[in-house]
Length: 269
Image 1 (cartoon, one colour):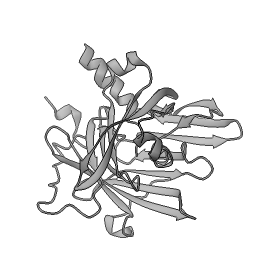
Image 2: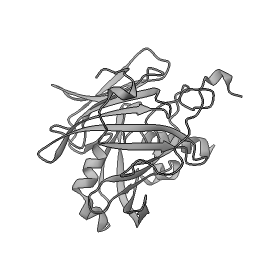
Image 3: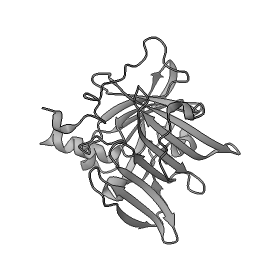
């Protein structure tokens, strides 16, 4: 029972990292600014890649488009983010192309509105959050780490309200230093994102993130995917962000019957 709750609570943490949807082929896009490669942590099976296209003005990231594709190029989802004015809680929308799942954050005259459409449900749910001053949402977490990198390296553990679109609310979270290590042949600062409340930490697996200690560039994320399976789950993944494309043996695409984000659940045992 505890493991079931742990998996369920872990899903609350993972809806971060990571407008209309384009259905173009991979060759239609320019070269991405960075690429993430997602694997199943246990089996090391390659799941998908994230192509990030960034717009930077005066040294600050202003907008970002992320395209999620399988190894053979099939588009799974697309996400748009706008960091202007609210870098820690950007306006964003994630749309999956394979199961109609949606989530995101809007900002209007009455403040922030979070919205969410579950897999297999035609109704989009939404909730107004007012104007919170300590909110962190989605990849705005990366901006928070970059701005507080020195404090995190010194052992401070800032707390904030982290948006969970699937619950239409935000929960108190904290991020803290675990260790200094090496990831992808790079020096890395290992941070842990976890609920600020002790009893939730007991239920939920934390998110493990690794950043370059000088540039604050994200090197690795280990936690629930922000993509959903046909059953509505977001399985735990490891996403690597190498400086260059992986060398050696290239990731092998999974077949339609075995890919967790594409397989028909009615065909599973």
